[in-house]
Length: 231
Image (cartoon, rainbow, N blue to C red; front, side):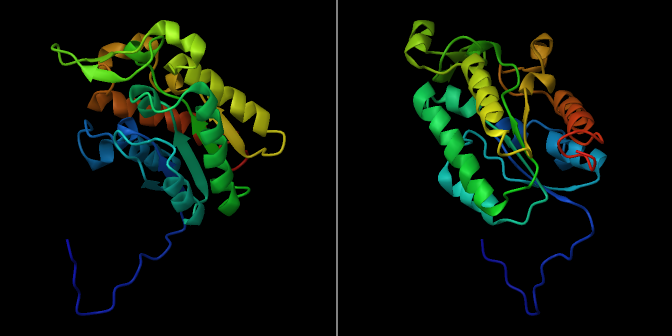
């Protein structure tokens, strides 16, 4: 698509709000939301009084280097990354390569934003992938199912449980030299007692997205939260 204008095209002027850049999967893309203001990042941004730039890519939150470079080069006062569901769902990494990819992704972002508050989030609940590796496929009941072998976890196959543990470990290891790096278990946004709000087994309902946004805001934008002014 080509857009033409006969006059000067100007970028929007800053409005005084902090800019929050977020990257995640379809669960941050929020196709199932009830409208543009119903996505959980927008709900959270409205409650936190910030401007959100949502760089989420449905099915493609795979720690691609070009995404890290894009975030590195963008103006950002706050950054968050929601990592794991696509990686497990596509069986895109093993444990050994996943950890290295996360470190590399964070290193690239830090090249441009060394002191910006950065919140690394793990996946929300998804019963099919909690203990069984991907890849995934859609079953005849319209729900996603995992096709991997649980026995392969011992050899490095990734489940959501393994991903959450590795992300927590990585953040803990880096925090001594990166005090502005934070971690959030995605189950704090949507937990195992709410999987009835995943009609296809992975993607939340519109109501659940709004609930996730409120929970994120309550955590991240609290005065002592990772995006709070007193953090």
